[in-house]
Length: 122
Image (cartoon, rainbow, N blue to C red; front, side, top):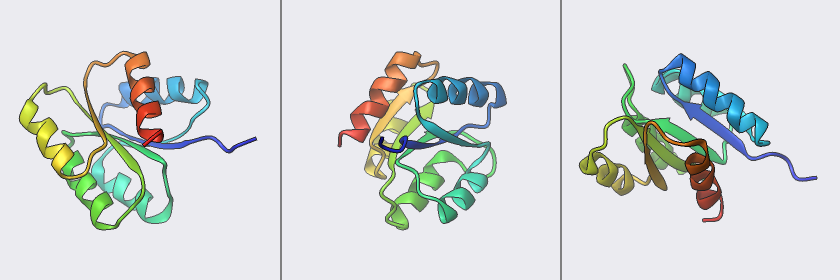
């Protein structure tokens, strides 16, 4: 049996982190969470993740900075940016920085799962 796909889910909203983690675990993914960009970067220095679900707007270190770190370190993780701000310029910037996909909150679980499957297939 293949090992589960590993996901790092980074979001500063605790309730949303718990909800999404539980949903993804029930779908068979192995999920680690971080509540801010600093924590995410520290986790990424010590562990590999197939997928990173990354909130754009967070205190201290935002999602764009984490994305820059991921690409600067040549990590092979696929990155899906998540944001409550429906702003095309944010989407364009995240793609230019190397994001594999972009979703606006609130997102339906099926849309998130489809995005994860899409970036896994890349």
